[in-house]
Structure formats: structure tokens, C-alpha cells
Image: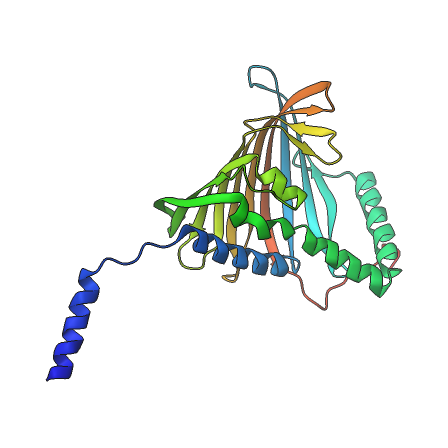
Length: 273
């Protein structure tokens, strides 16, 4: 009887005691672990990428539009981007032949690569994500709400840069010029959506392209095969400069679709075969 009373008492106490609020930094750390998993698994998927670039005038109206659709293939174990359409129209026979020649050339180059070259590529690939190791140091994060995103409960987390932090990685230094919100799935800790705005000018590449303050970025992911989250949609609206002279405004939107897991027995051969 005493044992039963203790069980009942502990149950009542657990119900009466409010659950400990989740820690935002811990949620983000877990989400970064899931991001690493997705990043590694993503290299096994082929997909299509439709990019629409809209040039804007000073009033924000579209004065020019270009659309390119690429198919991302797996070529000897690594992604390869092949152009398949322009302005939502298939390539001409001549353009298709040109793209095939590019594939043939790249296939031949990769076949000549040494094991050292392959390891160097993989090392560089992983280093592109190294800046995320500094994420919870760069940003002060806090939960600002809970929502439902495509039927899935998520945390909404605000990320405000810490100006006093001395970032090591170049991309981490760029992150310090961004303020964002992150939507993180409660069940598996995956990032499902990110909204960000730049708070200062950001130099891209060799400092040739400069994105101005208030550049807005929205990035969403989609669940594929019930095992992985992969890019679904990206939009960037930016005032930018090339060097210090030419200024332009762009509204760039990218849709990702057609994800398929690459079969290990599949292969791409030169066109003459």
C-alpha cells in the first residue's frame, strides 16, 4: 500500500510541477548536429534547382527577369550541375550538345584525379560548414514563440549577434552582421525555416560583390524520404554593388525539387558511348 501511495504522490507532483523550459542554446546545438547529418546525407541525392533572378528598378518594380533550371547529378561520387532549361523552356539541341560536352570533359577530369585530390575535395567540402561550430558563440539565442509549420510543432528562436565575440572563421565574421529567426522542429530538432536580415554591408567573394544592409533572406527546408531535411526554397532580396561603382537590386528565388536518392550502380558515361 505504501508503494502505491508513493507512486500516486509522485505522479501528482509531476503533474503539478511545471515542465522545465527548454534551453534555446541546447536546442540550437542539437539542430546543428542534425544539420551535419543532413549535410553528409545530401551528397547522395540528385535534384532540380530552378533559379529566378529578377532585376528591380529604384521603385522595386521588376524590369528584367532570367530563369535557369539545373539538374544536380552525382558524377563519380560528387555533385555536378547541368543546365536543362532557360526561362522554363527546354534547351535547344545545340545547347544540349554543349552541356553534354561539358559533362564529358568534367567526367574525364574526375577520372584522372588521384586519391589525394579526392581527399582534398572532401576536406574542403567539410570546411565550408566549419563556421557553424561558432554559431552559439556568435549569437545570443532565445525562444520567442512556438508555432506550427506545415503541421509540425516548432520553436521560434531569435538569434542576435554578439558584437564583442571575436570570430575565427570568415563566414562566422559575416554572421555577426546578420540578425535572424530560426524555426526548429520540436520532434527531430531540424531547422525548417530561417529568416535573416543583414545589419551591415557584407563583402562576398574577393570583396568584389557587396551586399548592403537590409538584405533579406528566407530559407526553407523540406522533409525527404522521411529520413532527411533538404533545401526547399530560398529567396534573397538585396541591394548590392560590384566594387564601389555599379549598384543594382535583385530579387532572387530558388526552388528545389525532384529529390531522388542516387543509386550506387548508376553511372554517367561519355556521350560517344
